Image (cartoon, rainbow, N blue to C red):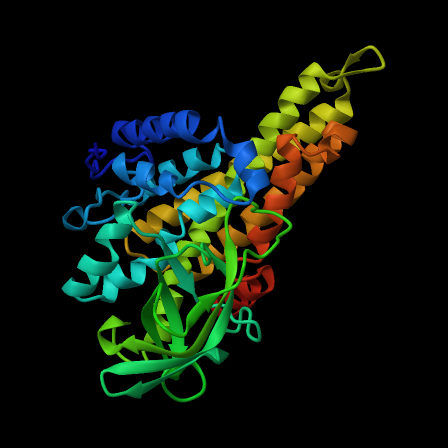
Length: 386
């Protein structure tokens, strides 16, 4: 049964009763379907594909998307609430893998034809197909304007050659929303194609072995004279760079939310352990140095979360937040860097051991300052807009 809720217009708080209903529903899903198995899935390096179907059945995948496509529309805070609760799984990799559709299908939602939405959106929101986004290349990294994967028009198809890397859900994706070069060098020669699994000339690597996000499959994608129908192009030819920039705002907000929740979970674990662990005859919270450290971390988490919410609210109101969302991502990641580090420090040797949540949070956290645009790229964007 799909979740049902309505936006409460004019509400001065970020979260209404409707948002809290979504939060409870996703929290229950995490407790029932994810938490009993997450340690096993982390070690396996993937989670069952059946989890997509389960998340689709209860409406989690469709939150924030049009009803006519199988989604449940609502303001941005429905998605924020769901994302925060999914992060309570303690696995950034699972959240990234299950949520790869949220960076793969928005370009189709905004710029796709009715036929494309029918083919590439409905099955994904239902949990029947997996969608991935293909932008990053081995030679380019954050410099997306210089991507080299080419798509040459040949009648009613594009012939695609090149490769992508660090693609979340890349091994198992049924479709990839892929940025390709259809025109001149630079930002003005980029287009988007949906490249489907099984297309001759399209292949993937085995799962890449990563420092963190173990539960998500990450792959390289290869295109060797891969013939993609022109009807799979999203939007106008050579206008893809603007779609990428549009997509980045939502992705950076999502990563800020992940960073804030990573920090919150690490802080919660540190607080619990500091109250239970004794040293020199008293709990760690009996030492001022520990109490003050925890107080400072809690302050940073609160500030980062509130600023992220404010940026989200302005984005939802249609106000351009390119500079502000870059600030939110950078600040949230810097807070998460510090909190996960200090949480491991509070745990001491146990924080270095597999099987402790803070150890996983510490590893998973590291990619947040890289994905969706590195800290350095965010600072470059901010500096240009000051």
